[in-house]
Length: 310
Image (tube, rainbow, N blue to C red; front, side, top):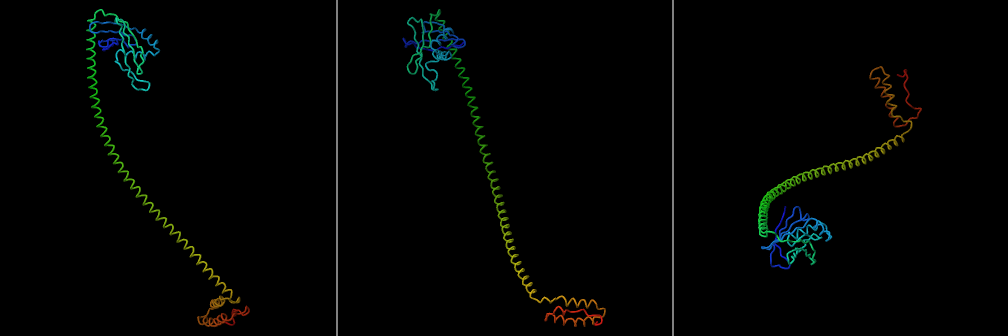
């Protein structure tokens, strides 16, 4: 069973304070009871669930929306809800009490000044107003104590959350410092590695440049050797052609190898001493010399001496 006690004022007698107590089982949509007191007199009333449903249908709103408005009117003061745009709307709730205190109605005044009926309850005089007032005072004190306990619990929870927040902030700051230190270390290592890579790249570029220069120099030397070889070959060809031309200019009957051949054959055929060989060579050499100076005809070739001449 839940209930609240609040102070209200009626439109016809705003100077007189009234105390309204509302009790319900599950929610106001399942039915609720009212107790109204001005300090000396008390009235009670009851609204069943069927009445709540009927009022919602008559207003043409959903039951949940109607129960929300009803709860704000009876327990939540004069402000309620949010508009369609998500902005809080200020809604004023007005209470009307009949002159004979037999009916209490409540309306909602929207922001544009339109009055919307929320509900009404029929009141009856309380059989024991003093006891009802005591109950209302006791309920108020009990509710105040509950609120104070809830307030202390929320303060303790708030303190715990604040301490946890401080610890989290300290840990977060430590993590940030560690991350910054790690980033600096990693950045310095990265710079070191990058410089090493740059040095290696420069060394490789120098090596490639050196190899390229050597390759270009080798190609140039090969080109020079090739040009030199062609020149040498051309000179050798010219000299060979010149020699061949000189040989062609010699008489056709001249054979330089004939005289030595005759001498060798004479020497090989001798079985006597060196004197005979020398004397034969002296006889042959003038003919060779003569042959060099005067070309001989094919008929005047040196004939091989016969055995009798020897």
